[in-house]
Image (tube, rainbow, N blue to C red; front, side, top):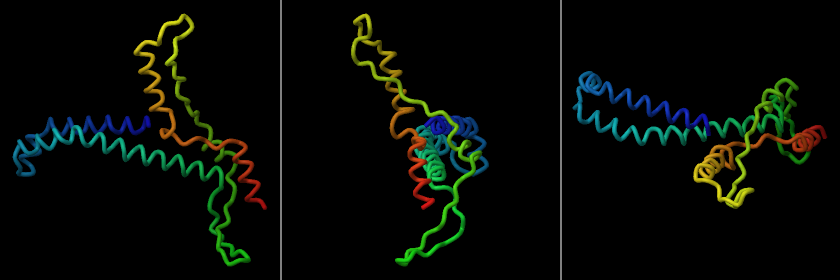
Length: 162
């Protein structure tokens, strides 16, 4: 999520730079300055949203791939035929160093919601409620793929050995 926000901000900056050079772009491409200006105006709002969505999807896909590698190991390139005719690829477990590299990052948790009055009976301030909402957006479900737990790893690795 944070990566997607960064890419969206960079795309806003790139669109603004294109807007600053609209006269040069128009003369080099032999188009109207007004057309370039309108393209930049629209792009200033559309491009960051698209960049955010694409980057978030890519980042979550990379997290899913890392989780799969931790749980199932790496592909060995060896194909085995089972007695009932199914073909499966044998997967090798990852080294401890690689497992550490894939699981060493910290996963932040969203702040607890505080819609009820706090200790002195006062309702939480607007800023505190906004902070809780932003925390849920950045770190809640759908914002990151959970790391595999030790129990999941033991269960899967035990299944792969047999």
